[in-house]
Image (cartoon, rainbow, N blue to C red; front, side):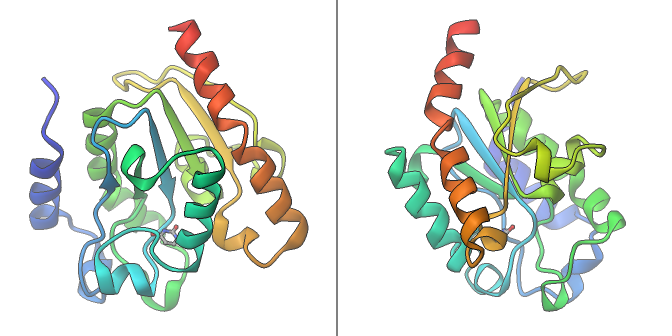
Amino acid sequence: MKKDLEAIHLYWIENCTCELKKTANQAVKGHGNPKADIVFIGEAPGQKEDETGVPFVGSAGKFLDEMLSTIKLKREDIYITNIVKYRPPKNRDPLPEEKSACREWLYEELKSISPKLIVFLGRHSMNDFFPDLKISTAHGKLIHKKFSDFPVEYFLPLYHPAAALYNGSMRETLMKDFKKIPSILNKIEQIK
Ligand code: URA
């Protein structure tokens, strides 16, 4: 039986053993449509997210919203979360043990939503599932892989919007890759 998303968040807010809990203001749980076809996974909350408790509300989030609107989607249509739910001090990269501590929370979220497609925002979330891939070659290419006891088989790595925001060529690549999402989803729906 699928677990209720809010129950999952409540459980893990109480029980997550991530050390980042000690320095962050609050947990930034996943946000959006619990029945979404697409789940976006980022890296970790930044300052704005730590203040508001909502993922992707800073400058990277605004850029993400712009890209969503180019494919006629809104936040309410998708679900967005992060591999770690607490802001790392000074926005440093999350440590392996911090990612491990938050992993079960992420998997439970994903199993509850069971989307058709997972979009990785950046190398950190991609490498959590596919440790050997490089974002510079994997971006924009659909991956099909069946993991045991996991409902999602299709994955699309993209550059992280924060990395691409002020880098002209990466920004263009990200926007181009992003526009592939509707046709990729269509393809998945036809296979299923
Ligand atoms: N970057 C992320 O990876 N996640 C957020 O929530 C905000 C910025």
